[in-house]
Amino acid sequence: MSRKIEAKPSVTLTDEEAALRKTERGKLLFTSYQGRNCALFLENDRLVEASFFSGDADKIGAIYIGRIKSLAKNMDACFVEIAGGEICFLPLQNATAPYLVNRRFDGRILEGDELLVQVVREAQKTKRASVTAHISLSNEYFVLSTGTTKVGYSLKLNDEQKNALKRTFTEMAIIQGDSLIQDCNVLLSIAEEEKMKAEGLRPEMISLPSTGLIMRTKTGEAESAEELLRLFFSLSAQFIRLLYGAMYRNCFTCMRAAESRFKSIIDQFCSKGESSSCISKLPVEIITDRKEMYDELKTCESERGDKLNIRLYQDTLLSLSSLYSLEKKLENAFSSHVWLKSGGFLVIEPTEALTVIDVNSGKYEAGRNANETYRKINLEAGEEVARQLRLRNLSGIIIVDFINMRSGQYRQELLHYMRELTAKDRISTRIIDITPLGLMEITRKKINKPLREQFKVCPRKEDPDGINKI
Image (tube, rainbow, N blue to C red):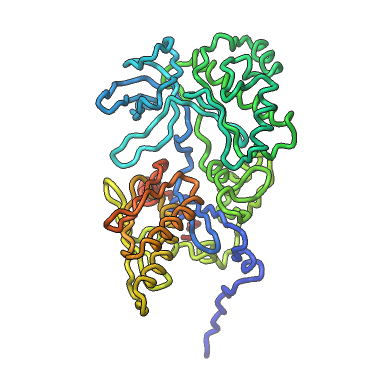
């Protein structure tokens, strides 16, 4: 008597899954890995950026009323206490025009001073979080910031666009020459000024710190001057209300919370008004296999006021992880060895002071011209190095030991190629030079924690129902 064996469910890709897997579009995936929430950005089926996060917002961009705890004159810096007793590092070069709330600024920073500060970098390893006293608020069109009175323009704006913007804001008596006019009444529209006075607020009491303006790329795409001015006055009203409110709030108050991680991640990859990547030219699909994440994403969509391509993935036979091989991609992102298609490989070793990347020819068999062979490996390795900087969020000083090439022309080609590749990085990255020893020097701005550190500090969530698929 034979026992009937039930057929196993097929895991063959359906037409819908096959279409979803195609990579003509950038993929922004929100899922979980080993119980930790993560956001993964794929371009052409390659993992380009990744971050782990808890449900809480991080502090980058948050604005507090802090107190100067102590001065460190030997470092030309001071230490500031913010909410929760956290001590942050403040370089004095980032406090040339502070907004003090307990006294009038006289050019000095003293212990006990209470001032507005904004978090610009998270605490990393043994280093404290960093703050600046140059407060900035922004929307997609403008940035208002203290510390300077200058008016700046995006490098992507042409001369005709810059002149048109300058003419519009000069005619409205908002800017004069290359500077923003330093007057609260100028920064407020008539309607907003009347609204504030009706609320019993007196903006004329504000001692305005040196305040500058940056015109962003989208100012060149505005439909009309009226629309531009509306967006400017909307931002400036937030700025004035922030300064006014700080005069009457207690020390350590959080005056402006950081954005939710969902919103900040979406803003990095999707420009408002269209589902196109701010980094890649590919349009972006946002996909998640977690219902709670889907609800968060839809809330962000509603707050942004534009339509995003958000999808809840619910296939029970083929997980989102399997569809995109996410587990393997993340394992590779944590490995010290990265293989190249040619057979060469990278060895990535972070240290306390810097990150070292070694390029090896590995299994690649040299041809007749060894210098040409090394050139090909280095160019391929350079592309992978640029990807790994973004993927692992490596920052600070990075030294890359490329295979030594005798040709000065090849070395210059490699330098130029690396500068082209790192220009796509949303975080400021500089290719300095190649030393006489053949070491390429790179610096990348420190903002968030490296990927491995994010994974370690991110709390693991209980998953009794086995929802976590990676």
